[in-house]
Length: 568
Image: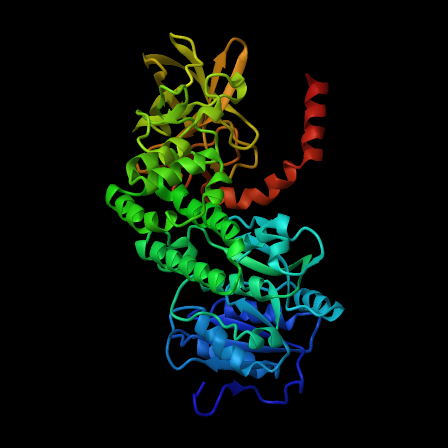
């Protein structure tokens, strides 16, 4: 756009009065922009305006955008005179020129389902509301797996008169997946904050608090493509959690939200907002702590700690005990312990060590905490480590040494922590289980006592011995460890060293139809398990795969089994 002449427009006459303006923001994304725009052009409600707002791209985006605008008079192309480095400025500049009474926002790497505009506009026309929102469908670009973002919040059609009716909505902080009344945004001067990251969180908190009424519909209205393992240069802001600047940005936005709540008379929502921060924002960083070095952990604690001290006690009390422990260890400037506590979060992994105090309470770690707050937060008595039924008891299984063996084999030293002293003194029977496809590989070994509550054993895992489906197997599996005691079994996850040299090997055909490449690697994200990846290898695998898929269908398999039983 020339700042003096306004946005570029396509030949032809656009609709005189569009019902909805959909802004597609883009920066150096020429490859995916056409897909995003095509999803808007396909909307079942056609009376729309499409504004492509380009944050001064330096790739082929300007040419692609102009070609798109030339094909459809509903499209306008807006180019910012310089790059802003975020999403806010391109959205705000588009909002200035939008001609419709209702507004939506779309990122260039995402899409709108075909009925998105129709569904949300119908909600606005049904009654006077400030915005309407619907279900956001997440699509993993690596696996194609679909899921709904915060499904419990969008499960039913409802209209709320203020966020106080359901403060859980603070968790749904996306500015996309919603249709806003232009009059609502203008009445409150509500715009995206420029010059900061995580702008959606502040904008959405303000919209929720300022809205007198908003409607939630269960229909999908946004398709969000998620690339969790993108290269660092292409990763989204949320996936750059390894950067301490990212941590500082998130804390800065939280403080802005806190100030807004106080200034706007919504201080009563502070506990709900604090709980959202602990359960969502902090939890994402907590899951990554096992991957960080000592220097990063110390800086993280220094950055986050002061803000954690401002949060309401009620928010802490709502957290699961495992998460409260990690938060407290960070607040107490014990980052190395926080890293250990974060391993296996959400998987019922036992503490590496516990201590019983003179009060009879059990505490995380090797000593009784000094402060009253730490004793309250690190109290694990409620976990019932010594009395829970064996099948749901808490153990901690860790790989302490990992050595590559011949071929596709690996030798593991496994240490089991039993802080509740549930296992009898003496060697323990254990089995390492791995299940690629439907076939299970089971390797029995023994865990010998090292000291009370700690056992250790050595296991040889030959991945070439795994029986694969006839059609081959493409996927990732994580070995688990099963303990056997008095006729009962307990199965738990197996934690791996956070970093070790991964290796890839090729195994010849065994029960599958082609050779496979097998990669052994650390999981790379919480909870930090040992990870094994299979991929059919060679040209034969590519050619045979469609045929083998048909052969492997349930009906064909049943017929083969019947023939085999007759001929037996």
